[in-house]
Image (cartoon, rainbow, N blue to C red; front, side, top):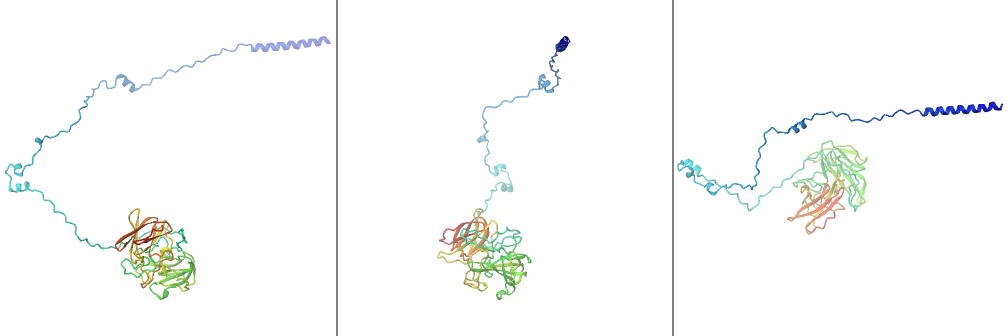
Length: 415
């Protein structure tokens, strides 16, 4: 038993050795020879170049060479004529060989006649006639700022009211018939408000909230207003009530006692009453302090100082006095744009108490002339006092009033 077990172990060892030898024999086979491939360049293809052949053959070798021009080195000297070569002045007879006819001689011998001398300046000036120039109609104007408006640092402005006409129509007063004036030819009644000319039927709106206290004709026993609406407003100024009046309407759209808001329609533009054309006459009235009565014709104030100016515009208010400080009435005022030198507007000073209608100066400004809706900028305010030209330079600021005094001894403007 022991012997057969030893033989089996020997056989296993022999089998293992034979397998290992076979494995070595397989791995010992020679590897195939490696072939190294050397890259070779392709033969270039010759491309014929026509210019190269021309250059090799010689460009222009068979042509005729261009001639060369010598460049002068001496400086250029302009030719001059000697005195002997210049022509002499000769008479007509010499030019004609001494045999000229009478007509030819007269023609050749003719000498030019000098024009008559210009007339001397006249010692006395030629009188000039002033011509009133009206502005062309405007199809559009900027929208007004929104009231109530008081941008003045001291709180002096009181732009409480809207304009009674929309911006797509005329909602500024006639420049030649402002508040407190009697017109361009001094033949109108003194104006207690501003006129806004428009076509009949244009909507008229409330300048502010309030109650209708008059609607129709016959207000304060006068027929000149025609159809009229009067509003007592919900607000006042310095303890005094404020009223607005809208006259010459073709139709009235509200009744007495009716409450209206700002911008509500109250009537239509017309030509009723004493008018020269269709428009709405707009007034601002304020009673005397302590008065409970409806303010009358002598209680009006300049509406331009109460209506909000246009966007980008301001107002100039001023006072024109003589050397003794007395207010000058119905005097011409010119507003000149300082940048362009052009006239921006004109107006006249108020015709004040002592006339059939009493105009009132603003309780804050105490002015006697106003120019509204001036674009923001620098302006010269000009007047003539006893033959002397008086002017002041002012700045117009959006939504504010610029005040100026004009007199021979006027103080410096406030702004």
